[in-house]
Length: 130
Image 1 (cartoon, rainbow, N blue to C red):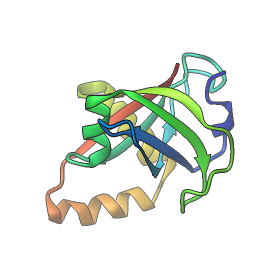
Image 2 (tube, rainbow, N blue to C red):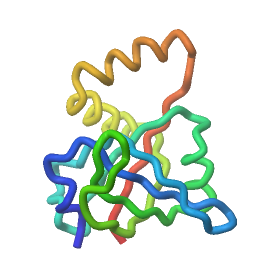
Image 3 (cartoon, rainbow, N blue to C red):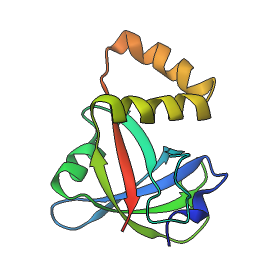
Image 4 (cartoon, rainbow, N blue to C red):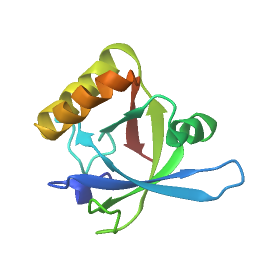
């Protein structure tokens, strides 16, 4: 199954789950791992967020997520796909951030510049199909 629906897309809608099971949907930027085909089970999508975001707390509690292609406002443009998310560190997190930087030039660099003044830590996580 994989993530074929995300080819050529800029946004994905990420649904994470609260402890009570209620889903929380958020549109986010993502970058696909170029060494794996999107339609394969080896596909990886990298996402970043500020270090204390609610989505990270929910992923730490429950790595099960759903993803769907969407527009910048979160309007769904395809089918929901079940997946698993994992928080990254070190070289793999840096690799994911490099892919995001490359895909979203110059917008991500502008956001990073202004975020630097707020001293917000960034966290990268990976989404894999289940």
